[in-house]
Image (cartoon, rainbow, N blue to C red; front, side, top):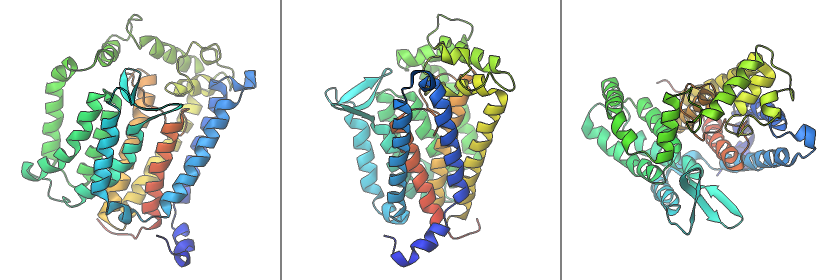
Length: 372
């Protein structure tokens, strides 16, 4: 635990530029969310208040995370590993688990439902980083690589069993980022990429029906009968009509007349494109670039390799979510239910993002510059 005498010193070590960037992204998101939910017209700011409350609770959670040294948490990586697997497996029980969007990944607690994989992102990063830490510089042969990969296989397997391909890819990015940082042989990376490409047809055959529909829709973008293409088409119309400066906040037609589906969460970037134009979209991309760069700097300055791996894991998670969400709104990537961090509406995703930000700040405030 943090001793009172060192509290001020640790607070000074925080990356205030990163914190300011997150506040700017969230503030920007609240304004756009007020348009996407039509709060300015209906006077119903319920979702805005809930989003603000979620952020407030998340910041309290961040403070709680900062009070505990990440190395202390790392001592319990085996327990975190087991708890993570239990949380992913328990939703597969019919009475307990609930299905949303074709995936049984939600825990049904009466009036409260939450996606257990969101919690597991946090616990998995803490656990897997400790496992990978001992393999730094040794991941150049299969004898060393296979045991590390096998630790992660149950997580990917349980996510496929739900089936939740989008979250499985998020975890794969976390795993890949950590292994690359630990010195995974580039030759092996190339072989894995080739192997994935070769196995793609087989992977398609074992996908769930709703996942195949999304792939089919992506491969046939001009076919409106394909499930998911309607959303993407409306998204492209919204972004294209926004031009350079946009139609003005609250002035979009696709968003204000509800042609754009799920505009408060999955397709909120299209609302930005239509109402604030290319200038608004570029502003968001710049903020996210600063956000990721600040985390990269923290990873380099971490006092130990465990801290570096934690930050890289979180950074990989955020990078994928940003690329995936924006990519699907402009038809570059198949549609999945991945939200835009700190902007999309949703309590569980917002709390998860803030919890993982807390991990990064935890490493940051205890950093000691090292050369590697």
